[in-house]
Image 1 (cartoon, one colour):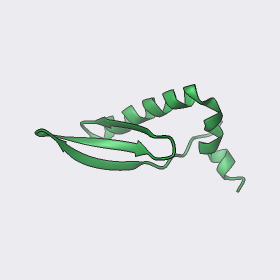
Image 2 (cartoon, helix red, strand yellow):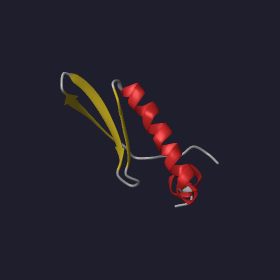
Image 3 (cartoon, helix red, strand yellow):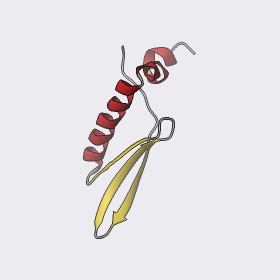
Image 4 (spheres, helix red, strand yellow):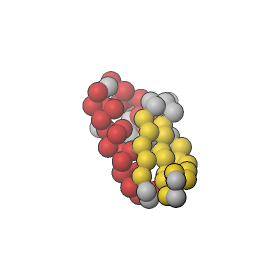
Amino acid sequence: MGKLSVNISVREEQMEKNKVFIVNNEETGVADFGDTLDETIDNFKKSFNLYLSAYPDKKRIFSDDEKNLY
């Protein structure tokens, strides 16, 4: 399988005195957060992979190969 392509929203929020980044994919409801953008993206990738492990049939929706068919 090729690479997967997902749309994400990124926002920055203030939690107490700390800034955090939040990444969200509306299609799946998968979201994660972190102190830096890089950490947040890494956390999201792990969470998204767990989602795909639980719902393997969803992989075809996000596959670059599938998108090239349309």
